[in-house]
Image 1: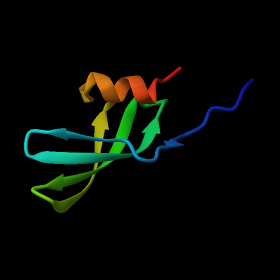
Image 2 (image 1 turned 45 degrees about the vertical axis):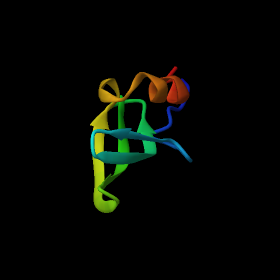
Image 3 (image 1 turned 30 degrees about the vertical axis):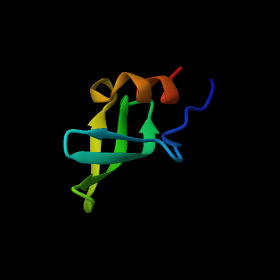
Length: 66
């Protein structure tokens, strides 16, 4: 049986939604979610976990889970 990675580290993947900008840190294929560093008006607000389905289509194409 093949080993599954618990998370995939990502580099230089970011997007903006309304006033917030996000940088994707890691992708969890088992949970289909991502950890993002959130910035509101340029101020860091912390790490948040967002479901994969809530990401913009362009970002989903970059991450592409198998």
